[in-house]
Amino acid sequence: MTSKILRSTLVSVAALSVAAPAFAQDNGEVNLYSSRHYDTDERLYSEFEEQTGITINRIEGDADELIARMEAEGENSPADVFLTVDTSRLERAKDAGLLQAVDSDVLEERIPDQYQDSDNQWFGFSLRGRIIFYDNENVENPPQTYMDLASDEYEGMVCIRSSTNTYNQTLLASIIENQGEEAAREWAQGIVDNMARDPQGGDTDQLRGIVSGECAIAVANTYYFARAIASDVDGVSGSIDQIGWVFPNQDSNGAHVNLSGGGVAANAPNRDNAVAFLEYLASDSAQEYFAAGNNEYPAVDGVETTEAVDELGEFTADDVDLSAVAKQLPTAQQIFNEVGWE
Image 1 (tube, one colour):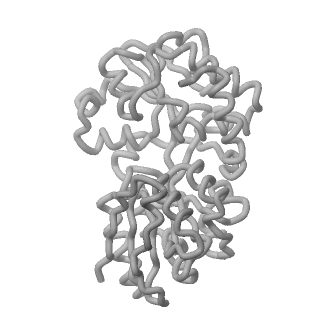
Image 2 (image 1 turned 60 degrees about the vertical axis):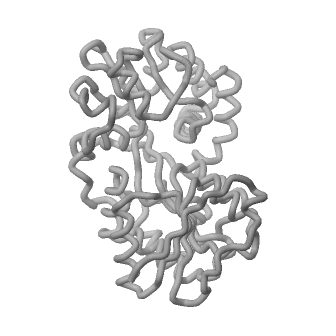
């Protein structure tokens, strides 16, 4: 059975207001709005279809575009499931009224509490650590905690993305939740003071900054580095041995992790199938496919990771409730603005 794929190419809310694709709305289908686009997802979806006989109809696009599309479609939206990355986007969909609560014993049992929304409107299915990378040829004493990263010792050494980046927003929100606003503000100001350059590019560009010598320390998600181990990433893979890494806060609350996850759409026409799909994503086989697609960590304990992820080693993850972290996102953005983090 083959999934139907429709790639979103939306450019405005006005464009989104056009009629939705004519999906048949019966018990044999589930309509998936997804910002994921990995090769291993084909096996992920085909296994679900083989196991259940339910056909997956996909619309793929940027997460913000899909959120805007669902808002424009309103009660007539055909969306059953919304899949995306980062707690901030899942929370944005929730706040917009685009998700609904799910009461599932399978999800409650399989997905750790800290990776679930407090109202059961979204669930995390894979994890990525946001950690510290450094030039192991020139940094003898790399920072061991997030707060260390803001120390005067590392002035002019740090490469990190813009404050508009969702990964940084959620990282700062986690610091607020764990240590309070004052400590978070001091941290953000310290990072600004320690920047080697103005924020620019994506996480891979921060790693490239280490290789080029533009910065000695960078903050990036684990999967960007694992990707450079597993494949040829220009400007990084050829210099892997130059880059060391630290999972921060191993002697305290643990390294910050974010997630890829999803929820059932508020107006899902095939709600039962949507819940079945989320429950399937919590199974061992689906967890392996889901995480492997982007060299991430499975949310369910005991599921195997890719060889590239294995090379990063084991670590203790922060067990802070990511639903509580999500509620700190507005404060995080306010702090970014106050300290002049571009």
